[in-house]
Structure formats: structure tokens, C-alpha cells
Image (cartoon, rainbow, N blue to C red; front, side, top):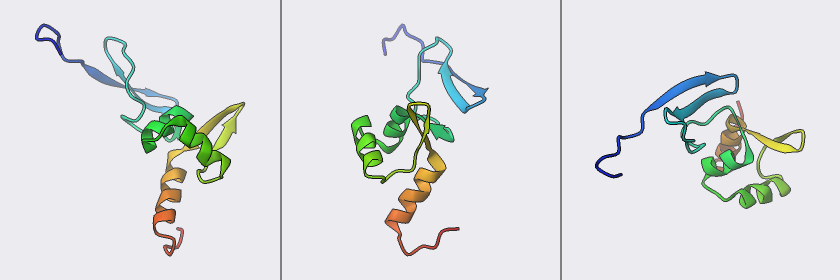
Length: 95
């Protein structure tokens, strides 16, 4: 950041899809700053810190819970977190 530039100012706006972070100057934020309940393929890739092609591979091998909206994949973050927790601790009974 240059000394003459001001730091970015953020505000939170509520959308029908959840909370969306935006900068007042209109710049987009990284999708993993605030996980929404339902994410796109790119957003879940950023959330899991993997490349989108890795997410496609996980889908192909049915290793990640997802659903279609038209031709696009959507991911419920709570289901992904539950699945990851169950994979790391397979003896834990589901609630």
C-alpha cells in the first residue's frame, strides 16, 4: 500500500443468500472471508484451500457432499464440515 492510499473500508450487507462482504470502493472480496451456508465451486475451493479441479475430482469420487442448481454445483458448508469431521474421526456417532 502506498503512503498516499487510504486503507480499504469494509461494510457488511445482508443478502438473501447470507452475509456478503464488500468494500466501499466496489472491489470484490475473497469468497472465503465469510463462509455462506451454500457456496459455489470456486468458493468451496477457497474455503478448503484447494484448486477448483481438486473439487471436481472430489465430486467425481463422491468424497464431498454437493447438489446441482441447473448445471452448476452448490455446496452446503455445514454438510462439508460434518463430512470432514466424520472422516477424521470415523468412530464418532452422527448426531
